[in-house]
Image (cartoon, rainbow, N blue to C red):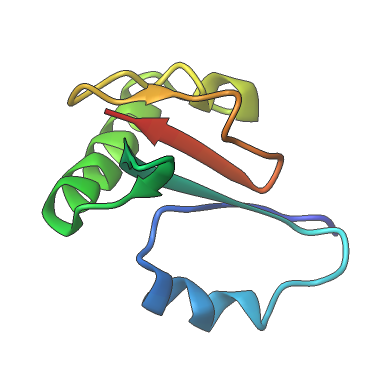
Amino acid sequence: MKAFLLNLASKEYSRCIEKYLQPGDVFLTCVFGELEDGKVKQKGTYAKMARGEMVRYLAENQVEDMEEIKNFDRLGYRFDEGLSSDREYIFLK
């Protein structure tokens, strides 16, 4: 059975899950950051707050489709299509 996992954990915690993924599973990571010198930089406290807001957004809107995740627009973050991929959604402030 194919699973869809939305990763909102820090890198340290998400590594614990990755080893259990099966072929065909979708593991989508959300990154919350700011563009500095052409690179996405995450700021710990702000990224943690954004992950919590993402959970709230998903629950309040009863999001079931991956595409709907892109509509997240809280705490000044917006989805960046150009920097994102099918395995990593980038939200910039």
